[in-house]
Image (tube, rainbow, N blue to C red):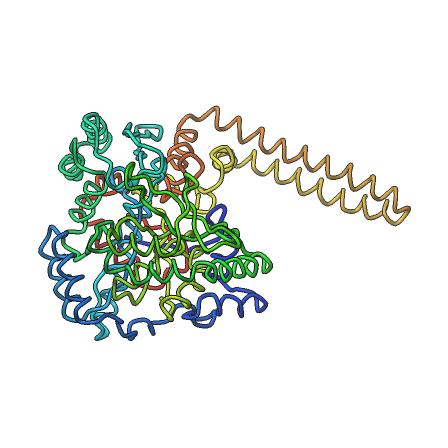
Length: 541
């Protein structure tokens, strides 16, 4: 495997926050970034290894109980060995994702690979660590997890799971319907019946919950890597995190205030707030004891109580009683969840993508208030995987990754222009250069004669240059129409690297690449994640 590194801004829609964190932030923004992410090093060495030496703040009793609960969820010897290391004092590098159908997009695999790479590096340096993948089974947005995108011959095939779902019902506990078998068959066809299709068939069976299916698939994919897969929705694991939930209930007005202040600070500095926080936001959910719905709790400004989706009021004492008797019914929101996680686990480092980095910019105030420490976060490996045939087409047509991440039409035009006969290129270049030179001289003279005349000349010159570029595009388009092989190459590059005009890692399911390259893909991406991930990498497999 070979790799090329590009600035993270090569990806469309990269936020300013992520760009500043992973690139060279401006001197004006650096103080805020260092305050929001206290573990950051200076720009030239943004992510340091100091996290490896952080003591794991767990009592022996908590650690033993945690190890027992984790051991009960693991399927493979390597993961059980990792649990045993945790039992005897190891710390954790943690990442996670919702239980998306068939394992989710490629970036989910890249998250896990980065956590494994960081845990190994820390262990090699003499600080034992294990990687943990936290399955966010308590989320309730089914539309985010009920589909998987796989490549067909010349299109992206979206497989969608039709599954009964009541409003706000946690997704992890949803039982897979009988027609999931039909989706598995179609996925197997698209994966050309590669061995990973057998893993899908074993995990996604009718009656199995969506959370259990995702847990089994990830456990099987990373069976040799010692990845601990954790579903924290159980009563026992919520009981371990209950002190954080209790503090969040008791301090809700104060936490709301500091979160709103942090959001205002981020926005005033030109960044964005990933999660909207208003005066009623409490970062807590309550599972309805009758329907099982996960309903947001809202603060009532000026009153000492919360309300749920039905408008029913709950005092802090009411919620603390529920937490004591049925802790699984109190659920953390997006900003509180990492704090809840890092109370339960001996976390030294969190691995996240752009959204998680933005969450942490806000959640830092919750860490400080509730845990009295802030867990460092590092960006995951972000990559485009390039298959040999696609790499060959890119080489032949002189296309690099940034060019491939343009619109399909723009890429096709570029390839068509490069395929023009040499004589056509010379004539177009000569005409363009001559026109530009003569227009520069003419508009300069007209500007010297009269400013208003000069302005009119500049407008007319721009129109002429536009028409010259139009001639170039027409010639490139003609070449595309004349050569179907060029058009096919452009379409294939776009389909594989920029499907549906989105980065590959955010669309195509990770199992597609496992089908193409087999189990050897996992060690390869772990190796690619071995260094701090501050760039977007093109990995030619």
